Image 1 (tube, helix red, strand yellow):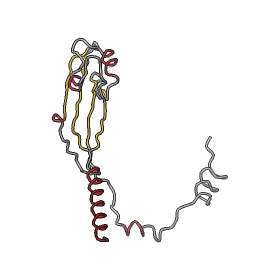
Image 2: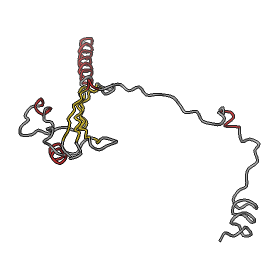
Image 3: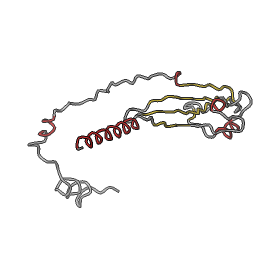
Image 4: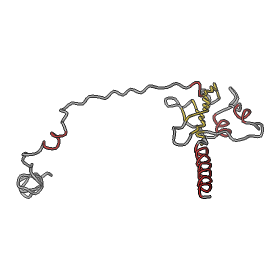
Length: 181
């Protein structure tokens, strides 16, 4: 009887641990950036993705009223507005992985009317290689021992209040020091 209870206990613990392990593998999805809200004309997600500003019809004001503030505005010329949205997925403790991205770039002409609308997806992205170079500095590189023992045997400099030091008699600002008008 005792071995039967132990066997049942092992089976229950195995089932619980398998359930917990499978729950830990459930992906966590998160959405970032600009998300289009459902409009009267767009009922599905596919239709929603196709609601873009019309060239030569929409103005800055109409785009602002329909889509809201852009995610970012062009750095050098403020004539391009970017609406950026993305979806990421993460399993347990692993890194987030971007599964979907959409960037809508709305470019305005000098009269404030939409000139061009460009759409970019995750496939349009590029990996940017960062450079790890360091700028050399002038001076001497000290070892750890030189840093620790570098001041051993050095005489201390003048301290505040000492004769000849800052704020002391005979020093600048002291009782007998020169007066600055």
